[in-house]
Length: 290
Image (tube, rainbow, N blue to C red; front, side, top):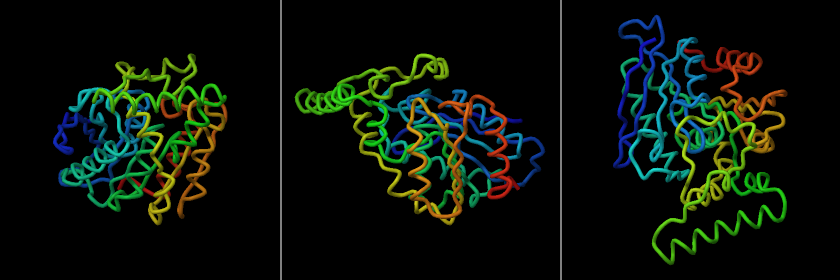
């Protein structure tokens, strides 16, 4: 497969990306394409990005993996991860891929994991150019998601106090209060090795606030009649499984929801045969490469 490094304009910034062309692509041929979105504070070289790019490439799709602003090699304030800005970056990448000579501009889809899954659903809901959406371990209601991640009264108080402290610090100093990643999204120690190399460890409190306010639930129904696939670990120890269940409840048709046992949050990086089979079968039915 052929890869090319690309620079993608978004707002006044440049995003770092890699376009991969599948084997057997003929001169002048246009294929369906996938934008592969990374997770929270991650980057385009994470296993949850590289693994689906490999599978999609083998199936004949053009893929674009890219760093959101402030992440990886992209421009922007390092660590500033704001949900709606990531939606903007995703839409900018749709524009970029629609002009690529190997891409059918009417067949550009999104796939994302965790934070990237939530952004994929939201972007698909508000941008009619997106032809299909796959969300793995995503979420639809930031407040409810955080309530499930900070379960005890003490944990919830600590989290909401952090949000308040961030707002007060910004008002008092004009600067961001920086907070550790695991104070925002707890990840069990045994899963942390799945994080991408060079993942961001400290974030402005505004990142947590933007996630708290983010509601893909409100727009998921607008994806229909374009196809939507939701995949979630049946017992996800990072993002509560009910998040994908509620997204499915609000979605129009065609939409599919698969809850998978014996896997955890980083599903797409595990190479699980059942998960790969679900994705392949769904693509064959709803969004073939050519």
